[in-house]
Length: 180
Image (cartoon, rainbow, N blue to C red):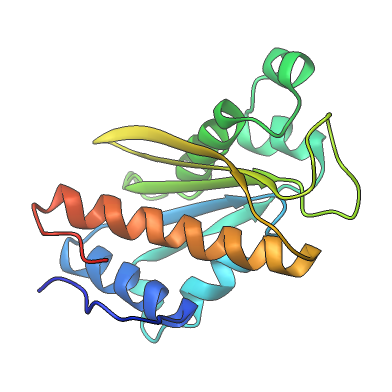
């Protein structure tokens, strides 16, 4: 059953759709977050029975943790900074690796990186965000997004966008029609 199209949907609606789609496919997700600082993980775990699909994640707010815990390429960071599509993808790949256990790989990984403010970072303005999603079926990066508003608004928009992108990937992979 495709998810329910709503004129206004909450973050809980999106997260609930993601958890349901993962559970129906017997798939799992791991998360690596920077600017969202655990917001994606909080949204997913707010759904009852999320433990059947959500494995865990890493908040790698510091650049060095992206390198040490998620294996984000040092040369990439030196060349592009941490606000970059390839960094988001490498974070997502690192999340899959970090949450794999008992010889059972985590199916999906999400990575979020960007600038929530108040100041720009790596020459990128506040509101610049990249999202990476990886799975055995493929890898994709989105961005740069330019989310307007306060620091909290940028973070909220990033969490919702990351989960909506994962929902779209799950839905498309299953051959389901994506609802607006």
